[in-house]
Image 1 (cartoon, rainbow, N blue to C red):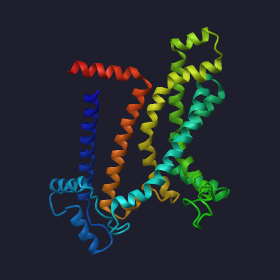
Image 2 (image 1 turned 135 degrees about the vertical axis):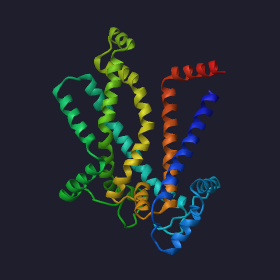
Image 3 (image 1 turned 60 degrees about the vertical axis):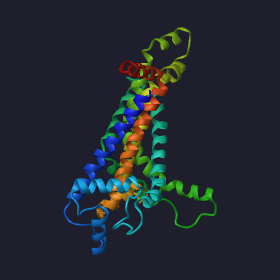
Length: 324
């Protein structure tokens, strides 16, 4: 087990180095300089070590990061530390991602189980076709359609923003006042992943229905609902648990457009603004954070999978023993 953990950590560190090296080289190769005037351009030259060659400059930037120095924003909020801006906007992105994940699972698990229970009915096939059509649409199309129809046409929900500007009377009142602003962004991200999660849940339950323990439960007189929702679902939950960890990076990447369309002050919108204004230190900081979060989500998914299926841990431990 320790050998496996060390190998995963070494692979993650190597992956981070490769990602940041490619990004640093790409940014250094872009023509022109960041907007904002000569002062920002001079600071860009200093903070990215652009006077050095790309390999030497990357190593110096990496040394700065190792000391906790990610630089300061050039043009989005000139002079403010990169990590300060990220820490200010990260809670909004995490909240949007958590809400989308909960809504996705809350809808996908019941729909997937019901679809597996009656796989060949007309409603099941029609619902699957509708969901696949939504899955094929880009997330920004879904977001713009919801904004135009629900917020603009019907006027049911606010079109943009994270909440009212007036200070709330109490924290509970403030939270309640923010709820309408978060509905459309959450739904926009959820619709993009719903079809895939339903299909995965349905496939897991169908595979569980073919297992011997399900046949034994039926032989003991268990009802069809209990067989479907307890025995088959528990057997098909392992890939679904793993998917929860792997969905997090996709939700964060999808939030770039959604946060921009709905004017949410999250990391996704900050990244979009930094790219538009060519704020290179801010781009590097957000990219490093996103890469680290993706690798952490991969480790989380692996840990959840090993916890849900102890046989995986036993097989890996045996492999480590043979390697020794």
